[in-house]
Image (cartoon, rainbow, N blue to C red; front, side, top):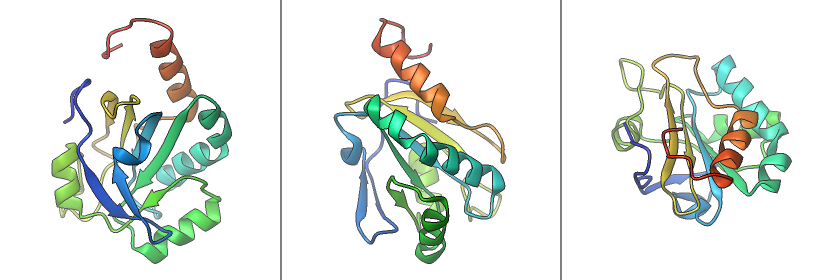
Length: 161
């Protein structure tokens, strides 16, 4: 698992638009949320993605970028983006064992999908907060992220707060 204050590992993943999402470079200079989700078949993940999509403008107003990734195929991920009107980059076809090892994510026993994992990064690409779930529930929400980032911006609170 990635401890607070550690640099977010470099990842390069294909996106639903055919581009490459390079983390943490893609979000450097802003606070960021990285959502690692189980897949489009997971109702909890769909709810989380929908909540971040509908709160995209308030997050951007606070200089908080959002990106998401899963092992879904490109076609499945594109359908999810279209159906939920997701305005942020969504990476797909992630190599579950490799990404899980880099990020410390829990996976299913066969390592075919990630369990929900979320990170809040500072503008330098360092982990401010990591939320690891070993099952389908337990994940970041946009309102909590905005509050957490604003609290950190406005105080000298240690990373673990």
